[in-house]
Image (cartoon, rainbow over all chains, first blue to last red):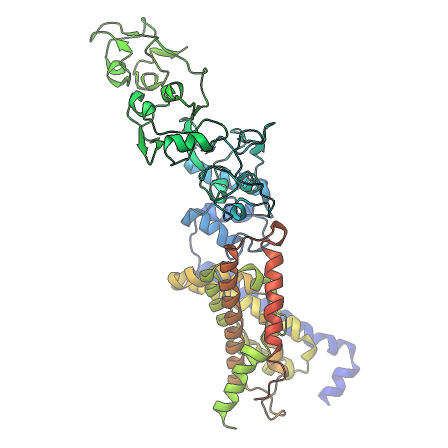
Length: 339
Length: 202
C-alpha cells in the first residue's frame, strides 16, 4: 500500500527524499555549528592568514599535507616560505608580509656566491660536460667539469631554484645576484651541490669570492678567474676586529664580528674578497656644535680613528675612518654624520 | 569457512587484490600529493584508516535505517557525502579540543580527506559487497572492518610510494621528469605490480 502511494503521487515521491536529506543536512549543520562553539580552539592568527594567502589547492607540492598544514609549518616549524609552486611569487610575498610583521627587526639576508669562476672565459675546464644540465649530475662525474674541485660547475641549478629571477647570467656567463630581487629564501643555497652560496646579512656586504680549500699554489693554478683565496692570511691580519679566520687554506668571515669596513677587500693580494660597498662608504664627521665630549664614540671605534679628551670636542681622523657607522649608531647626541 | 577466515579474505582483498589506490584508482590525489615524506605519509595513512573506519560505520547505519528503510537507495551518494563531510568536521573539532597531541599528528590531514573519493568509495562498496559465499551482504561489523582494512591497504601503498620517492630525490633525473612525472610513472609501475594479484582466489 505504502509503495503504491510512493509511485503514484508526485507530491509524496518528492516529500520523503526532501525531508530526509534536508533533515540530515539541517541536523549536521546544527551539530557542527554547536560544535564549533563548544570545541573552539584559539589558533595563531598568522596560520589563518597564511592559509588564506595560499592558493588552497591542497596539492601537496610543498611536501606538507595541504595548504593549512604548510601554513602551520611556516609559523611553528620555521619552514621555508617559498615552497608553494602554484602560489608562485605572489604567495611568497604575501606570506613574507604576514610573517614579516614580527621579523621586521631582524636584518634582511641575501645570498652571495663564494666562487668567481663558472663563466665562459674565466673557467679552466677539466673536460667538456655535455650531460644532463644539472650541477647535481655534473658534480658526480670525475669531480665536476671545473678544474677547481670547489668551483662552480656552471649548470645553473641556483638560477633554476630561484623563484624570484634574482640570479642571472652576465655577459661573461657568470651568475650574478640581483640584491633588489633576492629575498634571502635560501633556495639557491640548498640547490648548489658545492655549497658555494651562503646567506649573509645585507649590511655586511663583504664576502670571500672563493671556496677553495686547496693550497695556494694549486688554487692559483686551477682558478680560471685567477682570483682564488690562497689562505695567505693578509686579510686576517689587517682586519681591525679579527673577524677573519683562515682554516683549510680558506679565509672565512665571522659576520657576528665583522664591522663591514671593507679593509680586507683592499688588502687581498688575489682580489678574492668582494666588497659590494667599495667606494660607496661614507666617512664619519662630528658636528662640534652637538658634541658634548662623552667619549663614547672614541671608545667604540674599532680603528681608533676618533681623537679627543673627555668633555672636549672630538675629531675624526678621516684617513683612519673606515666608514663602519658604529660611532654614528652609538652617539647619544646624534652629533655624528656620515658624509 | 569460519568468521576468521572470512576476515582474512576481506583483509587480503582490501589490501592487495582490490587495493583502493592501485586497483580501483580511488584516492589518487593524496596518494601522489602526500607521498613525498615518510612521516607525512604515515600521518595521512593513519588519518585515512581512522576516517574510513568511522565513515563505514556511520554510512552503514544511515544506509540501513534511513535509505533502505524508506526505499531511497538512489540518494546514496548525496547522503553519504553529507554524512562523511559532517562527521569528519565534527571529529576534527573534537580532537582539536580534547586531544591536541592526536590532532597534531592527524588533524592537518583530516580536512583533506573529508570528501575524498576513496572514503566515499569504501562506504558505497560496503553496501554492494558480499561475503565469500556470494549471497550474504555485509553486516555492521563487516562494513566497519572492511573500512579499516581498506584504510590499511591505502596506508601500505602510500608508505611504499613515499619510501621510493624519497630515494628518487637523490637520483639525478632529467628536469622534465622531476616531481610529478616520475611519480606518475612510479604509480603506474606499482599498479602493474599489483595487477599480478588480480584473479587471486583465496
